[in-house]
Image 1: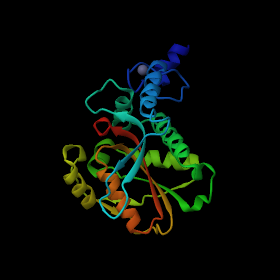
Image 2: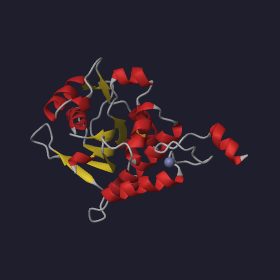
Image 3: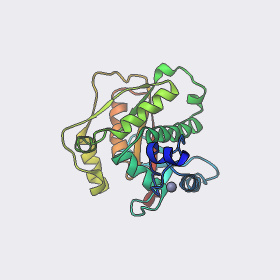
Image 4: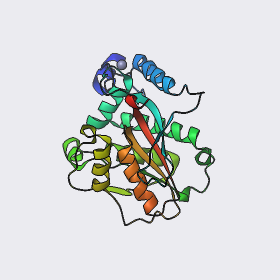
Length: 242
Ligand SMILES: [Zn+2]
């Protein structure tokens, strides 16, 4: 009976494709879950601190943008748990994948930011995300980081607001170098003028940070519209940055 339920209702492991046990919260089977945990652990080994990566800011007057990340990601290696999870997130995200990633992002945020953990004045804290390219939303039917940001906000009892929007067509960042990525990101992403960021602390979420161009462009827009502090967190950092 259990086996039958697994076959009918369960989804497949994000890495190995085996059915995931019925009722399991993770999108990984038990074996691949261990792999996922070990990938995370490697990145957290800097003096036991959470991994954080600095990227030069577009505005040279601002200190480098610091991004906290859960896991390292090598786009050329499809055998990693991170790669399986990211593929599923972008192409075929289920509720389980979204909730799992939301939990990972929350544990990253609360470990890194004691202020959030202590729950001070949540009305000043807003969750937002780097918007997905419109072409990709058309192709896959959803904006994965919007879903993740909504799940994070719901669990943390914060507001999720679409502070950033994307213009009609934009190039895929992964095909561009850093300078072109910044140019592409700054011209394609714009601020949602219907909302006032003045004095707010913004939690800005993204899937993968490579050169930091998209996050950087978004951060500048948020500061430009009056944000007090922008906290950037990504599920993964591309390994070549390490
Ligand atoms: Zn598996």
